[in-house]
Amino acid sequence: MSQDETPISYFDRRLKIDAVKLLPGQYYVTASNKALVTILGSCVAACIYDEEKQIGGMNHFMLPDLTASSDITNSLATKYGVHAMNVLISQLIRLGARKEKLVAKAFGGGKVVQGMVQQDIGNVNAEFVVQYLSNANIPLKSFDLKSNYARKIYFFPSNGNVYMKRIRDFHNETLQNRESFHCKLLSEQAQSGEVPLTEAPYAYKSTGC
Image (cartoon, rainbow, N blue to C red; front, side, top):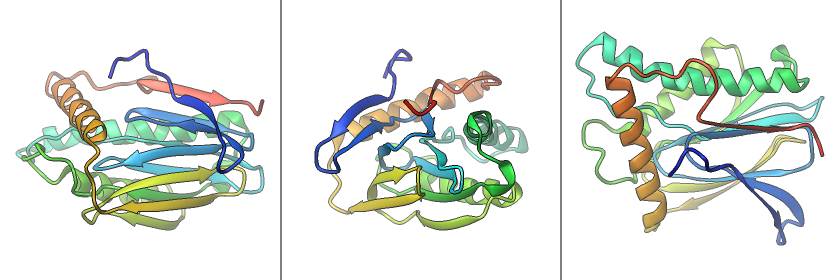
C-alpha cells in the first residue's frame, strides 16, 4: 500500500447512499449523510460521533507488532494508537462536534492474520481502544472486539448506526496481505523511533458536500 492512496468514495447501490471505504491507516470525518465502510481483521475501527450535531468519523488503525520486552517498546507502540485516536477526535471537533457529547462504538481486533507471531496484535489493538476511550471519558456505547473472525463495518455518522457482518470463513488474501504489510511498516518505524507526531498517514474529511 503506497502512501498516496486515499479513502475510496463510491455510491453504494444496495444502500442507495454515498459511501467511503477506509483502508489501514486511514480515517474520515463528515457532517454529511454518508456510509463509512471498512473490513477489519486484526485492525480496530473506532466510530465516534456527536449525535445531536450529526457529525461523526471512523478510523482504521493498528499498533506496531512489538515484543513486550520493555516499557520503552510498549510506549512506542501505544503512541501510534494514541495518535490515531487523537487525530480523529481533533478533526471531529474542528468540524463542529463537541468533545463532551462524543460517544463511540468500536470493532475489530480479531485473531485472523497469519504471520504476526510476536503477540496477538488484534487483542492488543482491542484492549488499547477500550482503554483510550475510558481515559478520554468518551462513552463506549457498543462494541464487538477480539474473537477469531473478521468483520465488515458500515458506520452512518449522521445517526451513529452501525451495521456489522461477521466473516467467520476468512480467506481474504488481499486484506491479510494489506494488514500484514501495514503492521510490518509500523513496527519498523516504531523500532527506529519514527513515531508520527502531526497528521495521520491518510487523513481526509468532508464538510458535508
